[in-house]
Length: 500
Image 1 (tube, rainbow, N blue to C red):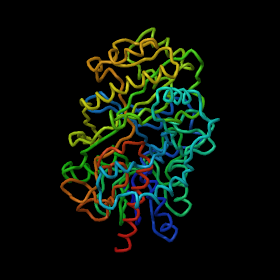
Image 2 (image 1 turned 120 degrees about the vertical axis):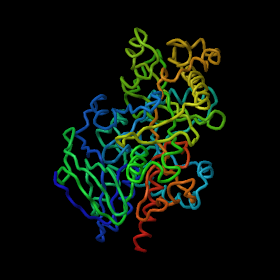
Image 3 (image 1 turned 60 degrees about the vertical axis):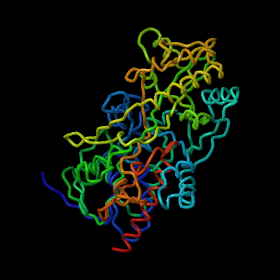
Image 4 (image 1 turned 45 degrees about the vertical axis):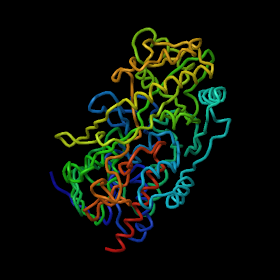
């Protein structure tokens, strides 16, 4: 096969919240003549490419259909491969990084004084706002009512949506492009100013000034790259790796070895999640309207979890149920009467939780569902049960009870019914979509992979600009934090280009 050659000043690998933001931040330089390319291993979706069919769109958007398994096979990870990255399949929840998290990270120059103008900028660009009450569906209203009856703290999610029609298909892509992610906002902005977007371009290895990539034939009826399929050597003065936590670390390991930096791949976190389901006598119709309006942070300090509203699709919902047979059919047959709650465990970074690669260079995730996570999940199931029944649910499907249904008249027995010994990993469906760490930033090469501005220690001209940079869990939905960090990386590139 013929080897093709391309040359740019800056090559950005990955186009999600990190890479798409770097492209946007360098767009003015592209307008002035800087040659910038934005590569993505996935394709570029148009509105007409979204059929709103769960199986079909999961296959098109997600790696392993959204069910990438950890090495121990007791948790699945969901991440997207498409232009715009996982901003295609999030719900648009927009949190600023909590100050307590930045203090815990303890990265020099990374503080609210530096981040606030960046956060404000992207909140404005992405149309972040609170939904008006008339747009909040019954599933979300029930969550709020239950929290109010229990006296629990409740907050409303800021969302980055525009002209939302309430299709409730956020997690398989929005057929209206109502979510204002990088595919809708930052990447078009960059393209209009000269940044070149190359889809279906998978990068195998990098070295200073050089990218080895392969452009593939298009899939799923999506438009092809404007270069022919084949092997490519791409030269560049600056290379930005923003392929997501399960793309960036493997690429660096394939390129420089697993031990190129002592902490490469280490300190992986992911907010392990449970999706819990209850049933009401009233018709809830959770599949109509935006799925996420409210959260409860009452238990963040005491038990290290968040409760959030959610509403998923039939397969995703059913795979989160523990059990088989007629009770599953019974519950799923009344999906229009379901209330759903998402639990996010705010896991703490541990060195042994890591991303590595197999012999083929593909990502492998080693993650221990340890006692602290199991304890948080037990506490969260009990709390969600109380919230369901305070909301008026007649029965709930609560893992770790040893039976399929728990009934409203048993609410006072939840501490006895939900037992740690009944919580079995591999049986309870644990998933995660907030994948963080592996290239933690810091000042010491012995304990970090990049400097506070995303520059790889010991290698000139290569940067990291995604959630891999996080030294520890973000403790909130992370995309806005990723964008702010990517903006810092773009500043470093500007500075270094000026010095070159």
